[in-house]
Length: 321
Image 1 (cartoon, helix red, strand yellow):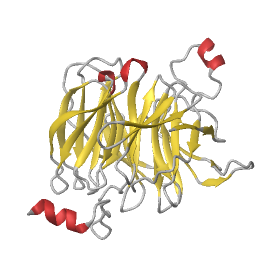
Image 2: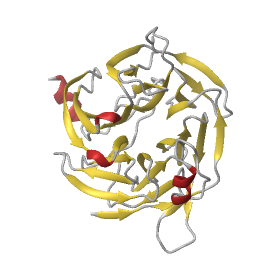
Image 3: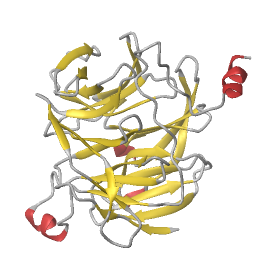
Image 4: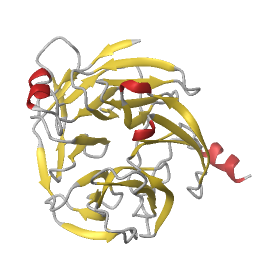
């Protein structure tokens, strides 16, 4: 299946990333990593006959450091994986440090990159070196109480988090491997095991952010290829979404019915000649892929409002038997 995405109204960003649909606000959230910006905007009607939505008036919060990703908090506000720490960010941009991983003392400057909450509301977030030193990054899990657990080390560019509809599989990409891997995921403890290859992107691009739909298909932004590629649960290619910008950075399902695929792109690092050929680089794009996404839980820091897992209660009971 071949699809084409169309651009949205907000001005291009430099390293636009991390889209997430905030169901409580009915808004799309996203970041511009190196600019340290957090954006939000509603979906609105588009003035054409495409049937696709656009993004409305954008509200922006500015942080004092790069911001790799954000997640809504069950208690209100946002949790940002920013710099090398996890920050609480309120609606006016007020910031306070919540937790931070212990990083290697080797003089290598690092920053947070992609992050997303698992079905139980634990935040997984990865790091990378600014100069992309091989193996200098890691993948961490932030528990609601503030404990930080290292899940993977020797990672180069941590990217692409998503879970299967039953919560038992987790998809992950260390981008330079040009491969999305899959782990067995324990929904109760958050433990990962049995890492194995899921799908390769080949020589034309690297896997970046990803999203999973209700049928278990994995939609992968392919950096350098100008595409989002969807793979079936067994790793076969299902669909290709063409994006008129080569540096496709992430994708997420948005809207009240989670049936709109929102795609972020970047302009950072492109030469003037490349930018002349890609005038839409850095914009957000949308399409309707004929699929419905899974809701992304909030960070579970409020016991009175636990996340609603994407899997059914009997699946959770089965994992305990």
